[in-house]
Length: 374
Ligand SMILES: Cc1ncc(COP(=O)(O)O)c(C=O)c1O
Image (cartoon, rainbow, N blue to C red; front, side, top):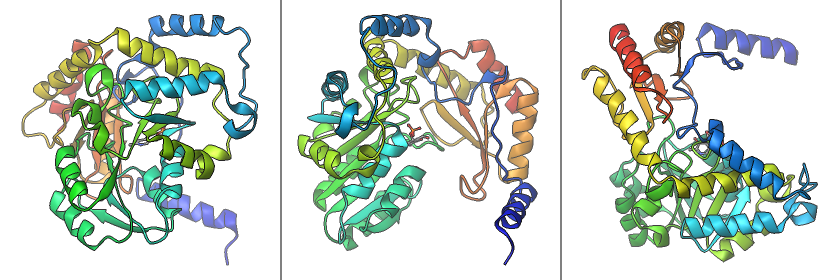
């Protein structure tokens, strides 16, 4: 048997040969069409001032949280923030997690039990797949945004049923027919869990998310809102019933066995939500930027249909998409060249993220370069 170093070396060699090798990069001076900072909150000077004031107003707060929430890391501030988030999103209760990954892992590994069934959209995020793998429940996939396919799985599901979907799919930028899924869920007595990572701050009034924009809060068992994208901070909240919150506190291992988020992170989430409340115009302005990009692209380009910040152009083949990404990088743009297996083979794509702070000139220029290259 080859040594572990030899094994790693061989695998890395294979990744390089197939143009699938990933490398970390530090910041560059490229124009940002790749980050998840859709509203520019992570770089907002106004928000930085609000955060500095919030920190000043709590001179006795600690730098670190000192422990897990159940031991020494809980604070009245964290609980007040959870209440505030629940109220904002019209939920009974909320529970903070250190990241969206942790939240999904913690939910799916602890709520569905042996004999239950988890049904996931085939394009669901990796953290939901990982959480489900840690559960003893049965697991099915249904075809992306396909209600017939979902119903087929619902018909054979056993035990309590959990449907896992996203409000905006992270690679395609599209949204599910939530009303249709709610109707099916009611017919088969299933519970819907929706990950609002890419709609938080972006969709609905004040960025309250897809569920809120459709007034379906009462029809959803759990919502996961993350703070590392449009909210400009870090962490996540699971929104649902008080029972759900209590149960998670007692059983969700990614909540229990980790140090709580520090005060300055909680403060940054709080002031970001204050900011969303004070700036109801942000979402509309973002839509203008998104529409402009779509309008400027040549109409025969293979753009995946989406009305959100995530606009993906399919360029089949890892090598081909890497070449297109390198061309645009050379022109000064940072955007994602997403290869398989991160997406299905044949669906490799340039993933463009539109932000409030992308100027009209930058958007026009990027579209012009893409039009020329393709
Ligand atoms: C749909 C979705 N859910 C969850 C996550 C994880 O959230 P976080 O980055 O806060 O861990 C991501 C991040 O990539 C995501 O795209």
